[in-house]
Image 1 (spheres, one colour):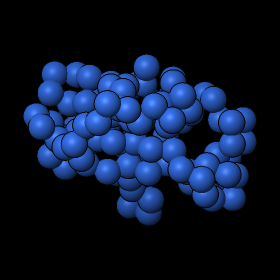
Image 2 (cartoon, one colour; image 1 turned 135 degrees about the horizontal axis):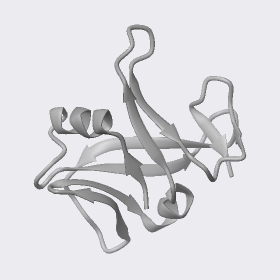
Image 3 (cartoon, rainbow, N blue to C red; image 1 turned 180 degrees about the horizontal axis):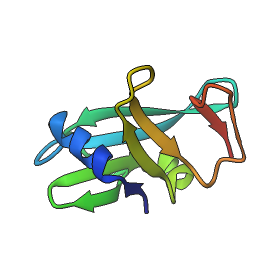
Image 4 (cartoon, rainbow, N blue to C red; image 1 turned 90 degrees about the vertical axis):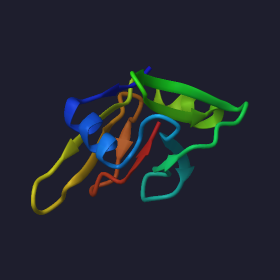
Length: 105
């Protein structure tokens, strides 16, 4: 359902996302374009969660409401000096703000 680059997988493992822990991604209202991503390492799964990515013990989980906006999402990691961090490329986004932190579907 989503894709992670090798650099993103490596960075998530360094953040201890594996085993009992996983990356939780949520889509929440906010930003210039209307929606933004929230991502955190978590270890509590509910019945309203879906597994969007699994590679060995590395998992990405989202709640049902967020999952519908994340199909096809590509996650990469950049370690450049000025703006290092995770990069989200969402094919469902029809508009994004100038800074890239929010989107509209």
